[in-house]
Image (cartoon, rainbow, N blue to C red; front, top):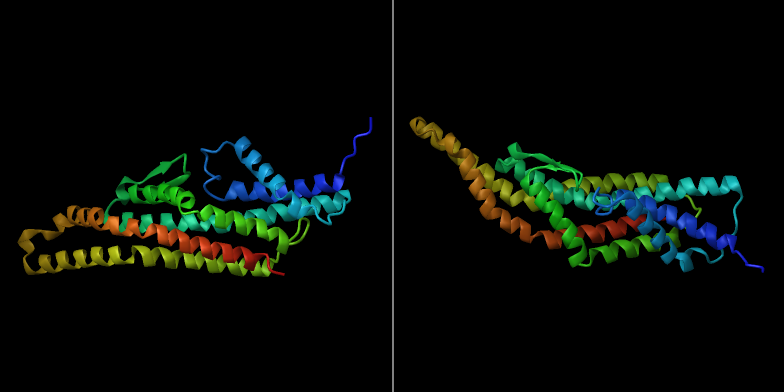
Length: 254
């Protein structure tokens, strides 16, 4: 019995799966240790099969060296795209880190092995909220839509535009810090004014020892006003996701 095997289809799907697996390994939330390596591989291969109609059209069988070079290229593309998604979660966690540092929660910092992050209460809270918002706001659809469209700009076996990728990574990294400061900025200003007021009170009446109230006052303000910052996270995640989708196009542009 003769069973036809389409080698071109198999090679194209394998290369697409390499890009997807590299993306899943780097991009949260799949990169967290709560996802076993086997599950990450299955998700990546499943996404590679899902884009088979897009990547197999016009694909030709490669020789051994071309295929190995294509595997390296696909892994590089997937890792670069995954790092751009990682910046979304880094920006949100950086917002929590700023609040923890200025609000006095940094002394309770600890390592979360599941999220693979090191931070205090607000950092971990914002990190978990980012995961939930990725799915509740539909941001994951934008991310995966942009990921699938990269196969149109850079077909399997193609090369990444390294200068554009480096420029976009630097731009996205700087945007991450700016966005974190913009979201946490109002609360940071309030905490700074609280410190300034306690300092002036200490100068006027040193016997009161106003700075002894610094920690409870700043913690109370952080807990009260931190709710306002938390309510801004959905819009923050949506804007970051849109920026990442645009960055996908810039990275894969010829």
